[in-house]
Length: 621
Image (cartoon, rainbow, N blue to C red):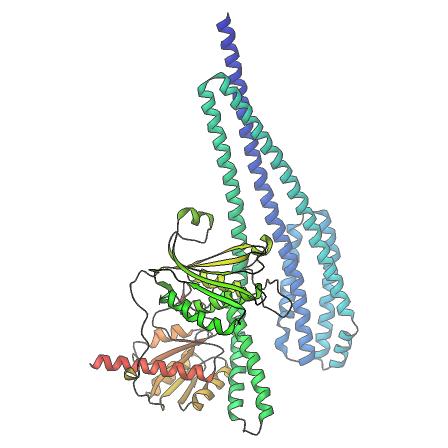
């Protein structure tokens, strides 16, 4: 009887324990589905907010284009306005569809769309007045502040719409968080109770409870890993979108800067010596244009679209050379210490871009220390293992050359550190920085297949580590050419300039003529082939990369067999994928980036002709 009672209690305990374990599993599953649902709502809210923001942005761009057209009469300014007329109906329908389950949003859209329609009618009216030769009437409408008031109402309506979506998202997130907390607590409690019962009943039940606890911990770790991965994915998508936007405007912007820089340089050269005031004004304008060009380069750097020319680099020597310059430029109150690792591997990297990255970090460190403190630059060999790579999705395990820049400045709190690499994010005062320094370093490291990591503590200092891929080719840096290697140049060489932009083409021709070269021009790849066919004296071709139809690389590929001795130099403000792949400039490609100076063109032409001459001498030998 006692045995039967014990057996019954044991059976009852097993049943209860199994029931508790089953409940824990169900709670965990519900928690997972709750998390998935919450994530879907987050994604839905992002789509809604991005769509309404895009809608407002298109209206703003339309107004900007209208103002430009009214002021200048240039029809090209109307492109955003015409684009808005075609895109607005589609976006309005899309926004209506994705918020169809929200009565509040539908009511807000009922109020918003008439405002947008009225705004577009107002813009259309002023454009018609301007087209009809009534600029005074058109500008009078603008000065009446009617358009501004309409935009203010649209802006407020968009803000209300966005705030409604934010409020709904917060409410959903709070509900989902509470559900996950309760379910997780229930899971833990049930697991513990099942463990106690299993321990009292039998060893097998204890092992079963232990396995369940391990499974739950694995599930929680997987959930955390998933949240981290999704956060990294969103950040990557944001950076990718910014990079695409940057690349899209870089070509046209650099073309315009090339025209400005080139013509200002020519103007300064042509001004007589007694025109000192005009020369000073032109020099100031040239300086501003070059700063704009540097800003564009930084934008391309953070978006990982700058053309890199990696080679085997002695990082210790690079740090030594940069530190000498830093000691002269950072000021006497900054103590600079370099700690160079022994037996340091060579890195496969673009040295000028590496020097620029170290300079950026040093300038940031100086600002963080308010001009007084200690800057330490350290190098070492490093191995990033699989565990580290799993925690940082962009890292591949392997051997790296590490450069650490440490300052004794104010440090960064966690919220600032999490956004340190975001473009245009800065904690400096207005006018003290662009917010592109660290994002440029980050973009350079990623494009070089490396990695950047920040360690910072408030009121203690900051260490930023750059990990660059080790060079395993066992090749040294190419030595600089000596005078004995130089080949005499024929300055009367004839150069073919291939450029679809007439203004850019004209100033490049002027530069070459100023340098003493004979010039021939072509506006397209087809024209270039025709010119080459009838002019055998052409020995150098300077061609744009991005052109309508056949690009510069396709032009070279189509003529290389016919003109094997033709020296080709590419010029571009944005490379796309024609001559750059995986962030690296294709082997054997010569590239000069827009905007460029007369000295840049002269130096690149001399280098290309010299290399060709040296090659011919070696072949004859």
